[in-house]
Length: 154
Image (tube, rainbow, N blue to C red; front, side, top):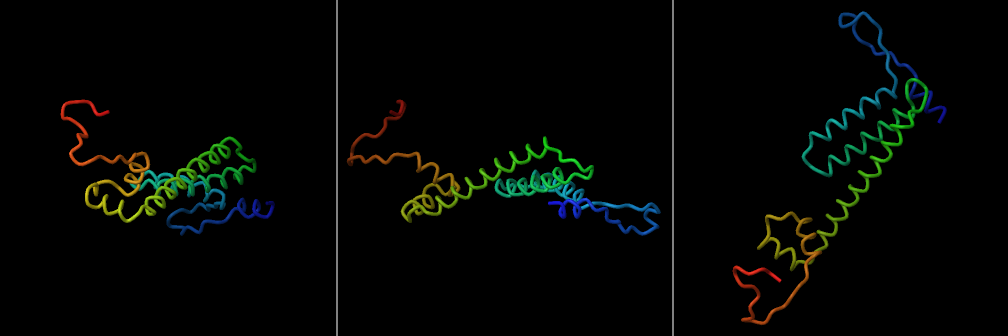
């Protein structure tokens, strides 16, 4: 940890041409992780895909963990570190849940897949999986009344 601390907090010169700025600038890798965190979080808000948003948020929070633990002022910032651990945990759970639901939707039998394609193609595979997972199958005899228009469904 001490070697990592030294490496992340070591000032590195930023070689800017003198015509841009005559002043000398430096940066640390810890500061780069801090900036990367905010860039990733901002980019995650710009994406439309739920899974990509969560993955980018985990990487952004991970970069913020490094920044808050190896802070340029030399002290660990425990409050944001704990909050970012919570965010990583929540987003990781949601990522796992989405991946599991996609896996389960892919495991549906061919009969269900064909039914969705023919009758409910507007539903996403995962939404269709959620629908049939809460459904109950009922069988009726031919000619039996299932429902009557204008009355409440049982």
